[in-house]
Length: 216
Image (cartoon, helix red, strand yellow):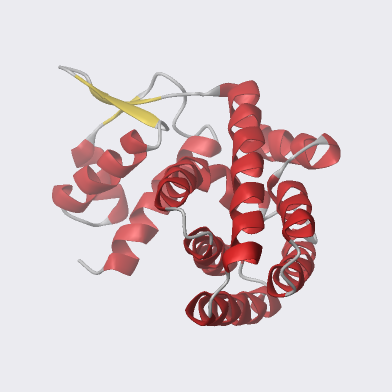
């Protein structure tokens, strides 16, 4: 099975969990999922392992995969920490930028522009993921890159969902433009401020995310 199909399957199960189609505490049966999505049990098992790794489900002895509800407060806390770490990554990237990192950021930023124009929020999410990873790498801090990548992975379901809020794609890309400008100008303080604002979900943005989580 291709990587794209495997990602599609994982995202479909994620969406069903976030929409409460699969409710907290519910057991996810591999055979039922395989039949529903027209795949074998192997890719289902792989998808469930990935969802277990980010805390959206738990694989328990004798019960198998069980849906977990982290709750809005926990999600907010993760975004809060993510915003601080991304701000640090942006600040370091501005100070330590080399030509290879500049090209990686520029390339992923260009792909974000194309997917934003298409209006496909999931396509934009994955291009956006590569954009942020390019910034982590540009920080030239292996430990920070590792920690950012790990928490970014845990927040993937919620970051994908957040991008479906009306006008968020265009707003997100505009924020990217300002971030790139600050990093390329070597302005670490501005890059930190912009990334903290970009990733944080205070006020209306948090309310929108919680409403989407409840309504789906």
